[in-house]
Length: 402
Image (cartoon, rainbow, N blue to C red):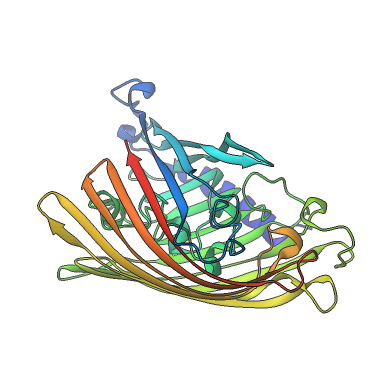
C-alpha cells in the first residue's frame, strides 16, 4: 500500500510527464541563445555581527537564533553565502547555495549546503514548476524571506521552530501566473523586503528531519501554502495560509542520556499558519501566527512528549528615503510556547521578546543594522530543567551584498 506522501510524489511525476509530453510549442524546445554556462549568475552576501554591547545577562542565549549571543560570544561571521543559479534550458532552472559560516561542534566557518535544487517548468512560461532537491519548505513568510532582506537580525522563534535552517529535501509543485511571478520578483528587487517567488499555490512532500539530516522513518511530511500579493492603488498586501503534517523522529544525537520518550521516538509534527504582509510603501507590517503539535521536553517527567505549541509575531517598519540613502526603522514583538524539535531533548520554550532597531543602506551593496533586544525566555531540557533567563543587549551587524 502506498502512503499519502508516496501517492503525492507519484502524482507529481505523472503530472510532469503528461504536461511535458503535451508541449508541442517548438519555441519552448529551442535551446538558449547562449551556452548554459553563460546564463548563470554568481551573487551572494556576508554578515558580521557583535552582540555583547550593553549586555545585562550573559546566560541569556538563543541557540537557533545566533550562537554568539551570551557568554563566550565575540565578533561573529553569521553568513558567508555564495549563490550560483541560472537556466540550463528555458524550462530547467538550477540553484546552488552553500554557506561558509556554518559550525560543526566547536569548529566554525566551515562550508555546508543550504540549497541545491532544480526547477522543471511544466509549461513554456513556467507558471507550473516542479522543484526537486534541498530548498526552503513553503511555510512561513519570514522563513522564506532571505536573511539578506529580513530586518530583525534573526527569524522569530514561533515560526522558525518549524524547520532548522528553514529547509529540507523534497519535491514541491509551485503555481503562479507570470504577472504575479514578476510581482514577487519586483518586491525583492525594489527593496521592499519580499519573500521571493514561492508561488501563489504550493504543495509538496519532504523528509521532515530538516536540512542536511537524513530521513529517519518511512513517513514523509506533506505541506501546502496559499499566498497572493494584491495591489491596492500604491500599496501591496499579501495574505497567506499554510500547513504541514508528518512524523518527526528525535534521533539519538538529539537526546540526553537518561531522557525518556516514545518507544520509537516518533512524534506528531503538525502545524497551521496564517498571516499577512503589508509591504513598506512607506509603512510596512508583517504578522504571522501558527498553532500545532510537536515533540517537547516535559520537566515534570524528564521525558519528551507530544505537546501543543503556539505563537506568533508582528514586525512594523517604515521606509525612509534620504537622497540615495535608505533607512528602515523597525520593531518586532514575538511570543511562543512549545518545543523545538531539532534542539537537544526537543527543548521546551516560553518566549516573550521585544526588539527594535534601524537598518541603514548608504549604498546598494552595504547595510548596517543596530538592534536593541529585550528578552524573557524559558528554555529547558534534561540538563537544565529549571532555566528562565531575562536579558537585554545591543546588537550590530554589517552586511555586504554582491
